[in-house]
Length: 286
Image (cartoon, rainbow, N blue to C red; front, side):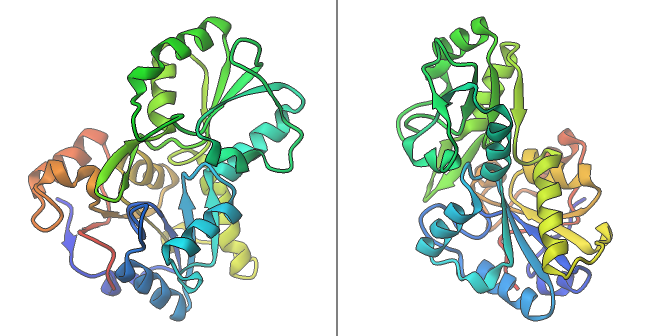
């Protein structure tokens, strides 16, 4: 049974490095969570290193601008490892192939400064999916015909955000991972550039080592913090590190809310995934 803890502080002393998820843990897409930001800031003040590890389909610099706008203080973290940066490296390795971008205009910063030859799906050589064209009105079902065309053409897809859904305020919206999974079910070839896959963790651990003066990290001294079983908890488990699972809106509705989560239901979710966190928190609070 996973232990539900009220505060992170008593656990913090066991770790030197945090790999902390962003959306759902330190903000909800519209505003920062002050208690979470304060907890990360306090961890750093005690000598710890915080790397934000996010499936945001944007370069780290663009993610930082969003965090600034939402009120996340820069004192809360040392560096950012983003799925967008991993995706960017995939694109760099495929220049000058023609690229079909499946996603909103706001994600074009992934390709900034690259000599990308954009093309429609009918003539592209591969695709990058960063999300839905309009995640306020669309669902993955709206992409059935487009994905069928991609599969017929045998297009490789790089998924810039493996998340299925995220919180935006008090709503859940679909992400690129939902589109990529639908394409994979059709037999399409998909490379997932973010959590729970290894490349983004390699980038995050490299950033942490750099922030600590090139120190060789011991995995038992690293803690992942996240709100998704599919990405955060499974990714941490595959890496061999502990995970603090934060109950967010993604799972809260299934568990009776954050305030009084259904513990047996929560443990059933973990058991079905074949993973277990170090502990569970209703929210990240020192």
